[in-house]
Amino acid sequence: MVTGGCCHDYENQKTILSEGIAARANVTFTIVHEEGPAGKSDKSHRISIYEKADWAKGYDVVLHNECFGAVTNVAFVERIAKAHHDGTPAVMLHCSTHSYRMAGTDEWRQCVGQKSMSHEKNRDLKVINLAPLHPVMIGFPAEWLDKADELYKNEILYPNFVPLAKAWGEDTQKEHNLIWVNTYGKAKVFGTTMGHGNATMSDPIYLDLVTRGLLWACGKLNDDGSPKQGYGPKQ
Image 1 (cartoon, rainbow, N blue to C red):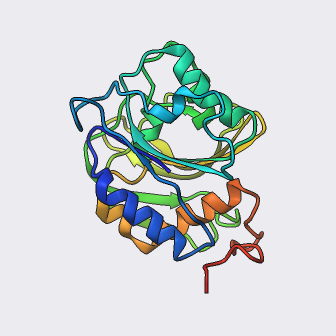
Image 2: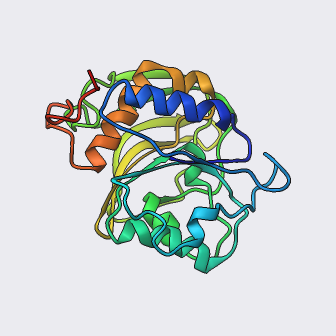
């Protein structure tokens, strides 16, 4: 799990996510949590592990929950994306979609599956399940109220983006996809822009969703939405 940056309670979210997912699947996290010299207001910090070409080596999946939107170094951003293009599965949560958006390259955006540069005002979101038979969405309600969250605006959806859920944008007066899966190079990617606040991340429905998404990205999710043998919660 790579986490840290602007605008969110990453200190608590790293625990919410790691403990919540580990209670649902056989997952052990190594957590990299960094803030820049200016603390939580620093949007331009470069997470140290990304300086290595093989930064993801040895891991089955990387969960991104970070918010560094002002990083502009193209080589740095493309190095992050390359690890996934070469085959490391990814989970993209909330502000990871807005991270690295000021860099002059589309590689991170293509890895995420969409381009998004802004979000609507914080409010309750009525989430509509678009793919109830997709393994990631089995068990997710037909409609779910995501309280006090941010709806990220879809500007470009790349060709391998598969929408799984949407919500209505009151500011933009159109629908935006907020749960999806993507294929980037050799990697499977699960993403959701939900999760601004700890209440959303702590919700069992959210944790169930992200766990299924992570297992799907790794090829460890059955068609019925259950973990494959050996990948359920530890006894």
